[in-house]
Image (cartoon, rainbow, N blue to C red; front, side):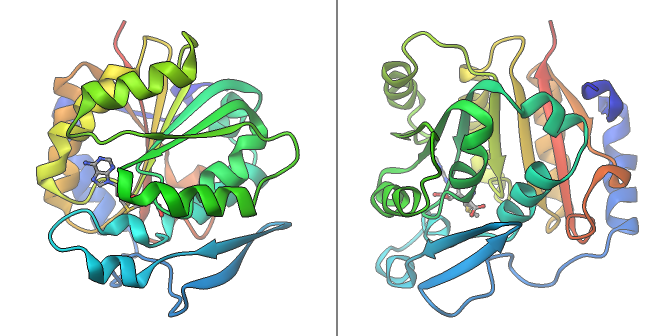
Length: 257
Ligand SMILES: C[S@@+](CC[C@H](N)C(=O)[O-])C[C@H]1O[C@@H](n2cnc3c(N)ncnc32)[C@H](O)[C@@H]1O
């Protein structure tokens, strides 16, 4: 199984692809953060009970951008469940891989706590203010033999992020980049794409999970990724779990060689 099991989207396909996706999908009207009023709760992902500590006070103590990381967002646990308990080309390629870097992990780090057992090294990254609680959550949910590291990587300060990452990776190449619910704001797209491209080589697979909200932001994102020489594959609905079919979309990208 390989990326070619998914649908290749070229520049001329973006408009039709996005139009059909929004016409065919059952969209969620909620903002997309995990529906819990509490700061501490447990979410079941298959056999795993993941302890979550998020920070509503963190959201209110910061103004402007940069607060979304204090919450857990819906698409991450759904993706973790799909990767751990379903057979499909992406789980086939991911299981047993080397280095995984997640961009915008958020305070909960649910992918680090679940998928790190399937790779040799999982590096969770985010902006500085998110990292303390991220470290606590990852520690509370540490699985036996999981090798997880936490690195500060702000897409608006790529040089600093890359230097932090290089010290952690010690020349190892990145096999997978994961980014879940990081595409929601037009302003961030160029920064996110530049950061992603900087850490990719020609073999790296970038997996981006999106909650379907603003279709213009999604179209802009896909067009910009294609402009920056990424090939774009859409994971068709037939592969997805029933939960992911409800208003989410998964893309895989690889740099054109
Ligand atoms: C909607 S949250 C998703 C968090 C997490 N992936 C999840 O699914 O729960 C978006 C994430 O992107 C991060 N983010 C936003 N702007 C960023 C930037 N300039 N550099 C790095 N991370 C950023 C936020 O801190 C936050 O963790």
